[in-house]
Image (cartoon, rainbow, N blue to C red):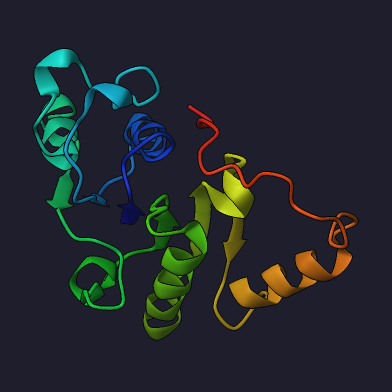
Length: 171
């Protein structure tokens, strides 16, 4: 049982891979609807899907998958226990308001339920990587990794000329 948080530019491809591998139970959550800007970089969506919830479209296009869907936002104000409970791994592809914030939230649930989780997608200034995988009580935590990366960053002393908000996606 795998839960995928966020089914956009990377999340749709993750769900596709899980389905093709025959994962028994897939749980997806995303509150967004399909827009025209999704069509060139997100799997499954066509012009006929514009205006429909992403999770509903995906479930309809993979009818043989055992899939549960939610339109839940990853935020401190939402309870994710019902999505996380019983999962074998969590995959964070939710990047709003930031991948760091959604990862910290999912990390709390992963620790509470003793389940590994992975970051996939917009991690580290939206470079589109998949991983690392964090295992509560066995590997470094997310904030430990962020601190370490900031410490060893060879560019840390340079002035930011322009902060890039969106650069595309792995998909």
